Image: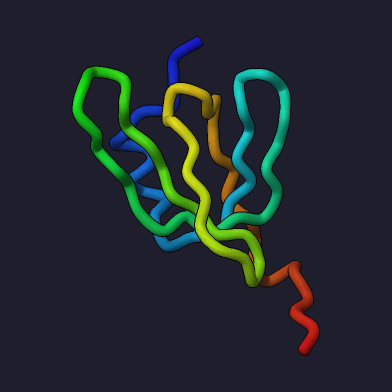
Length: 78
């Protein structure tokens, strides 16, 4: 299985997605904000925000794929 690449990650920046990890876990409904390129070959990370929480980072090599959310189906309560 190929890893989640930096080019595909760029296409999801600014969108709400479900992040599916290689270990089978899913991080549900996160907003991808930016990419971090560290020093070294496998040090790229993606930054995301959960609802009303501080930002978190996860290495791109741990992400299997991202599935975009259909915002028209999500009801936002105020």
